[in-house]
Image (cartoon, rainbow, N blue to C red; front, side, top):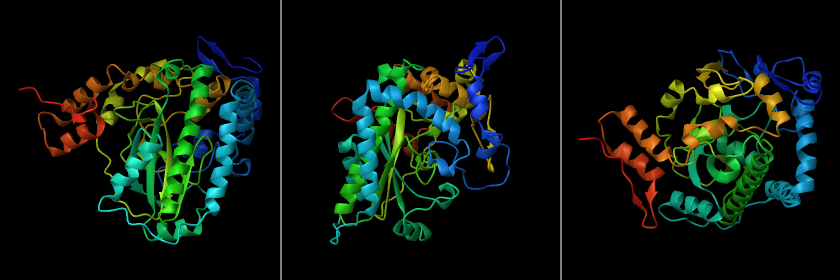
Length: 371
């Protein structure tokens, strides 16, 4: 094995000496709750403040490689990140306008249109749940009160990566694009939160790369953004896995979106493409039990050292059939047929209207069952 970088051998990837030296004795899979049959809150593991995590030296190792290159080669992205940190810090102290503005009979459409204007590629709405909040974290008092009353709205937004950079993974171009889209997600969430505050409602916006008070993936699933893929990332039938997510939580009451069944879960159970393409063999064939829930899970202890070597990775997302722009629509419709058979009802039409639209006219392209 190498000292600073791992090596790929006939037996698989071997992590570098420096990673093995810095990692804590406890397994990352253990921290994440792999194999646990009882529910418990998620435990912070990476991308949090160092005082909250046991993998602090691994986080510092990754940042010691990533940040200097980003600062030297892409000062605009690095500066944007620092500006967003300051804006988010100021946002937590900001109070809503004393005059409440009524957003009409369809506030959900108003909010989604506004998010799209700010740059979101797709938007969903759900309610924040207590079980998503990280162990040891608290949300602001106004948000906690709304959460206790089951009235804390969560708006989840997806921001698509540049397609050419996405196809370069694992390479610096893709890592740079991830950082850029995390910035864009933060920017959109802060702008939307500021706009909601002006309408007289409490709001706070958050985007990566740093983690917030709660895990966003289950929230995005409930908001209808996508389904969890075998590679551990969300898959949207239009964007594939080629996006980052951001959010706004607010006291503005909105109707929740339903989480439609796109058929991605069934597809991933049969597909082996990302499993075979993963150099450290971190993607398993099927689902695992994680904190009382059976779901797709990527082996943290195998994945993280390879990611650290490569400023991130993204191979699994690049090879995923759902990320192939020329085939994703056909794949979605084929999976609809497989999932729903010859049944063609209003629910399927609603999913299709949500996902695909034709040209500037906005006419939905419906899947038609064979006669």
